Image (tube, rainbow, N blue to C red; front, side):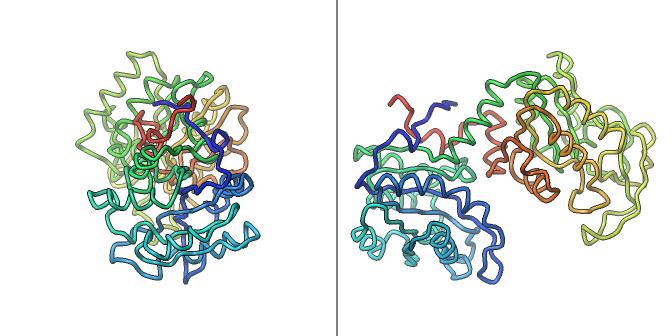
Amino acid sequence: MSLNKKSVDDINVKGRRVLVRCDFNVPLKNGQITDETRIVAALPTIKKLMDDGGKVILCSHLGKVKNGPNEGESLAPVAKRLSEKLGREVVFVSDYNVTGEAATKAVEAMKEGDVILLQNTRFRGAEETKNGEAFSKELADLADDYVCDAFGSSHRAHASVEGVTKFITAKGGSNAVGYLMQKEINFLGNAVENPVRPFVAILGGAKVADKLNVISNLLEKCDTLIIGGGMAYTFLKAQGYEVGKSLLDETKIDYCKDMIAKAKELGKELLLPVDSVTVKAFPDPIDAPVETEVYGVENMPADREGCDIGPKTAALYAEAVKSAKTVVWNGPMGVFENPTLAAGTIAVAKALAETEATTIIGGGDSAAAVNQLGFGDKMSHISTGGGASLEFLEGKVLPGVAAADNANA
């Protein structure tokens, strides 16, 4: 995984057309943006390119677009919000073809410092398939250089993420990463490849299956691995404990046994829950009031379900974080969407907020949890990509990162 990538600071864009892949996959309700975090995160790169005299062409996907192009998933609201944030008009090309005649004409009319936004890239259909080859070329035809600033999509080998880069290279242009991508690569990459020790990794969430490679990879890299969330119960079952009606993946019990053995073999500390907050039945709806009882892992009743780490476990995990110099956290400790079952996740978030360590939150539910619980501004870095950050922690090469030119190229 080469982390030394060409950035927007390394390219001269004056008078040149620059295609920027952003992550504008924002939540919309009745055509209104309900969370503009991703728009705000893209602004530094866009402003840098504008100020340097580039002709800035933005593109992004929004939603999953299962039933073809539709106004409900148009990027029009994003163009409007961007115009307000940048203090100048962002021309929106509403053409569902994305790179058609309307886009070509809009680009031809651009002056230095102008910004346009193309329509939702997913409106072109499956951009990761062979159809993506033509789309990749059409995107590259609009530009001289390419900047990827969409970390949340960088694990997908799509036309607007990876495919476009080879056509830009062929015409002698540069493929760089934006400030947001650079920050993600620096924090996540350095945490995994070159951490300041002690390095503590905290993994939670529902399923062991989602984190198989992450668990194995992080065990080799970290000093202490902490397991919480629904996936902890398969580990407890592997140790011979009763887990009642808790989430359990029978097919992964042997894998968990192997990981427990691997930790011992490598001399790594693997921390598992010592007690659990249990419920009689899972709350429905998820945030409904619920009665709980705490049980030690050695005496969990067969008719109850563990939905959060218990207070002793929370104290144990908080203590483990105190002496850390680097902490990576991916996945909540319990059903944090329910106020009664959020205590474990809050305790871990609070411990991270109070530590002197570099704290990195790996996107997805853990990012939502720290933000919702009010600890977001206390973390060193909150990743903008759930799936991408998970694959990074697995040690995988991300297509969107790999496709960028190396800094010395």
